[in-house]
Amino acid sequence: MDTPRASWRNTTHDWAGTVDLDHLAHIRRSPAAFAPGGPLHLILEVVAYVADEAEYGNGGHCRITLFPDGSVAVADDGRGTDTRVDEQGRVVKKPVMATKDLRFFDLPDAPRLPDGHARRGMSVVAALSAWLVHTNRRANGSWTQRYEHGVPTTGLEPIADDLTTGTTVHFLPDAPLSAGDSDMLDDLARFAPSWPQLSLSVEDHRGTA
Image (cartoon, rainbow, N blue to C red; front, side, top):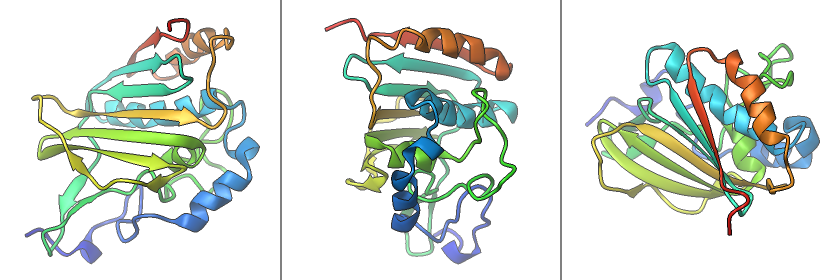
């Protein structure tokens, strides 16, 4: 057994919670405030977490894939989302999708993303997406979980290990990307130097059937 869950130190999110419905509803009531510029801002929110990992020497590769259905996948080669076993033997993952990021969300002077808007955290991406699939590969096991507007619709579903670590966040924004969003690739290329610790690549499949 692991140490009691109540003793786990909160760094980015509160381990005591799993889903904060009020928090998610607050985001959904003000999409223009939490995702100014739409899907591009949501992508930057995800990439910021990849950059955090790389800054501390974990991974450094980030691949963004734009799909024909308007969804986006952001994949990295970091350690994977922190996943622990509590004193009752239950597997618990850090609640990054469905609770607030303690470092940013309520701070008036939150750091800015490359688009000039405040960073609020991954819960913004989950809350403002029709669906989001979080695939996590970590040294102590691999799993995937699906959310709809930030609310989990599955548990942690085990997947086969492939000897790699990292996360893939695949999501469909409420205002999905389309092939007509021609500036997206230019914007991502322009913002990439903001994260010199990352090797960032973009695959655009929006024009394919």
